Length: 216
Image: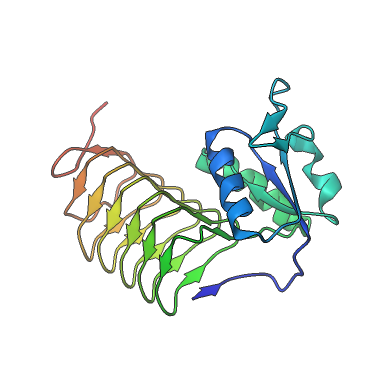
């Protein structure tokens, strides 16, 4: 397995931007890796104070103040927002970690970009490439030789067969099945339970079995 990094030394503290449900799972993964001595949240919801025993230390705008003292992970579900925040942090030189649950199977010669999280029960098979800022959610699978663009979300229980390519920012819904040798362009939403058997080359919302572009 390989994980792309920027050659920067990791810190002993992790700050997670986003203390919602997704952030909670990210924090749990960070705790289970036992990689960090201290973990904190940043979130713009001032009513949030403590998540999993981890303190919310302030608003997300404070992230830039901590670049020299902490790794920073963007736990925001919306791909465009996640991209914007992570890109700004990267431009300022922040250390953006990759977080992988201990209960994950990763094959040989896999490459994973910074800011990506791979959740419990996921399987990533050999020679796949996963970009930065991606979410490979609980029990999802990415088979051999897949190419996953930046800021893609492969949702809970979704399965990509071999040699699938997913374009940047695309959301693959829960339980989706993508057949082998399929390309899905950037900026798509593939609805829950859809089965993709043909290449998708036009951005839009796709649902059904087989998946078709929604007219709405």
